[in-house]
Structure formats: C-alpha cells, structure tokens
Length: 84
Image (cartoon, rainbow, N blue to C red; front, side):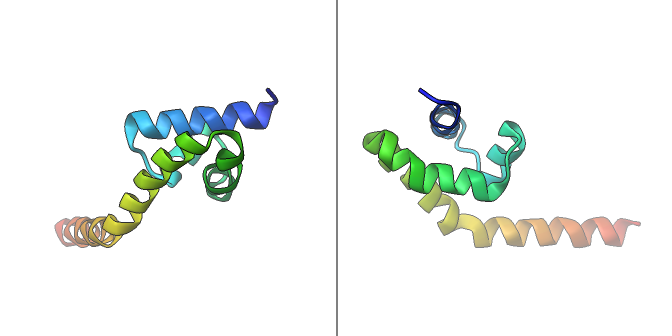
C-alpha cells in the first residue's frame, strides 16, 4: 500500500468514527480541502467501494445541513461583534 492509499483509508476511517467535515479533516491530516475531497470522492471508491458508500452518506449529510451551520456561524459572528 502506498502513502496516498494509506492516507485515504485513514481519512475515511476517521470520518466514519468522528463524522467530521472535509475542512476539519484537512486540518487534522495537514492536506488541503481539495485533496481530502479528491481522496474521499475519487480515490476511495477505487480502493474500497463499501467504505466509500459509507463515507458518501456522511458527506451528503454535511451538504444537507451546511445552511444551518452557516446560519449559526453568522449569528455567533454578529453576537460577538455586538458585545465589543
């Protein structure tokens, strides 16, 4: 197994275990968000199709709720600004 395959599998297992986002995984694994995205969308399916399907469900969930998280983030930003 080469270095990239090992990273892809580690990212996928970590995502299944923690349900973290691509952005969070990129910080943990010290690679760009686009690299994590490519790892989990393109490379993983070639390595382990079953694992890819499980990860894909988490990624789809993140897409479904991102408008909620974005709204919460904006709310915190303006609350912080009003307290200054």
